[in-house]
Length: 524
Image (cartoon, rainbow, N blue to C red; front, side, top):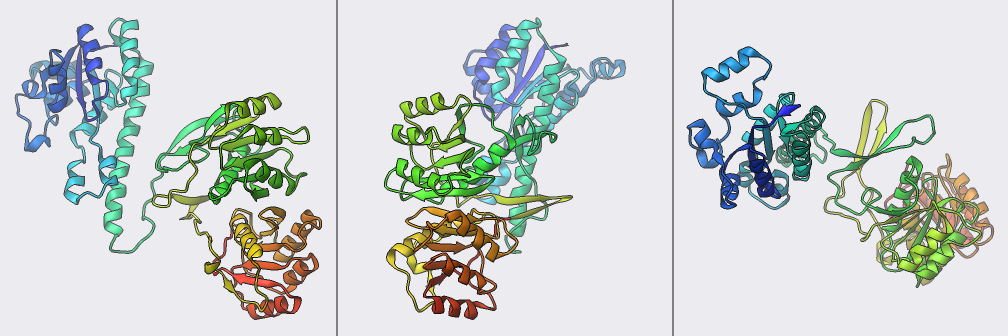
């Protein structure tokens, strides 16, 4: 235990600080404070000693220098059980400080706005991080608090232990303090990296600092013998699997999270009409849009009913009773449902059907294109970093028709639909679609023609008169022949092969309409 007799309060975020000061004063703890914090405490009628009275030195340079003084840091860093330290304090007439409550200038919030360099620099805190680090270094004797949410914990601990703070709490708060200053310095470093690299036209920084916080430990990873945890990107401001609220069901597993992420990212592609995605092992086995959500889900499930057993379902509208009943059919088994919201009755229907189904609510569905974050893939000993693939086609004006046969209006609708879907299928990828519904998918194949064959087998004749989307160009005409044999009437692909002319010629020969997008969508 560590006795608390003197506390130093110096905060930028003043939430709860007056209440804390009042509780400390009532516990006979002397309060020292600085600037605006001291003023706020005084206005509440709570006695407070200003730092200038303690140091006998005025605040300087518009507050740039306040707490950088031996009277402060000597009182924080002195080891109480070391006679030499306590003797020095006594000789210099310095008293120990047992509790530091401090949070920092809002640098990250400031630079999010369009501010001048001078304004940004003035929001770099110097005394605060130094004081926090001094207190955290000496956590054996000093308690440091950086989070207003922890004020109640401090007061409860003081009351419980008669004016003392437990070692476990001091250790926990020291960890939080060093993490707080680490994150703070990280934001400053990122800001200066951006300044440095503006003129160099670099897209990616020389040093990549990642800001992830553990959301939860998982039961295991992809397999039971692998330990795993789930971390949240602190910088990504966008609805996602990490921000979804669980309304019901068991904890999400490693594979649930990965698959649900795939489902939700796919459904973000569709805003104009009610849409449903059915995902299995990170690949869409069903996807459809319609005029109502129930029909969209019904069509999506029908895309591959066999694979849909034990699937993840993503929906882009509030789930109504009719849709919930369709999802809960006796012939279906669903692991996770993720949607913006649920009618009360719809929620009851889903819960009643499956005791352990995970039901997730996301509120809004959108892609934050201004601050999308990175797409990252871990390799042994390194990290591959790229922009997220946010390219999308929404109009026939963006398509280049390369064949004599022109696609019909309905085919164009299906081509644009299938192009959004194929982007979310593992390469090599082929998607067969008809009436804005997936009917067959060939995913993760080593050759494009194999992907076409598998998609056709999955479609089981439903693809006739339908369309095909390919995530990359056709290297040979064999896949076009395969599509023709399956009754496909229109194809969308990036183009760009040295054999494009051969492929176009084959499409012309077989009476297939074909359009180029000019962009591919590999997904490994």
